[in-house]
Length: 294
Image (cartoon, rainbow, N blue to C red; front, top):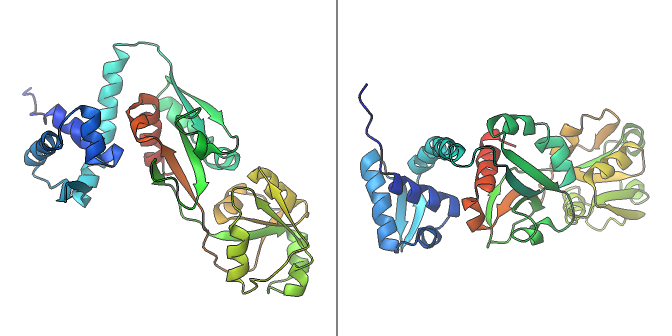
């Protein structure tokens, strides 16, 4: 059987690093290349594929739609190749990732899918940290993290994982008592339950329902999203959480207050230091996370 012609591997490596690091300058530094040498490698890959993978403006490189499609197909295959090569070098060696994850994201979205990751990469093991200030600890005690934030530090490599609405959530009984139309007199007597990582959500919700000056009886703060939902289910107050949290809870004790769309100031992001993407455990998890659609 004739051997297929392969693209230049160094050109593929240059392309993948530019995409993963988000910067041609950072990729050139990682590969110990001059910017012009990096550009030549990428150009060689474009000549080979017949596709324009990047647009070039003022020494910056922006991925084109063709380039993104190429990366989506080729990136995982390169990962498989690296896995095959490494399996012959360090047989049985454990790959360990120190990952920060909000507890509710972990319970609702990550852990139900981790068996898939284990089947694909049995040598990858993950130490999970659900503590506070995850973003601040990335690059120190954490290799990477999934965080709730309006906008992560631009010094990080970051990928937005979702887009959310703010829901007011309470027990079925309390929802019937409060009614279907926002009433300031009734709401001012209620206790509101918020997660400490979502402080702006209550203001966004009050603004959306036209009650910016609403002063609740109390605002109780939690460091656990699961406990916020449980407190709401027990009738202890009105939880201000995300629509995704409500849907994934599958808790028939809970009800949504008022059918009003409220854009959340917060989103889930995957973040790590740009250089961390060269670490195999981080790279494996990053690629899987994007493909799994968590």
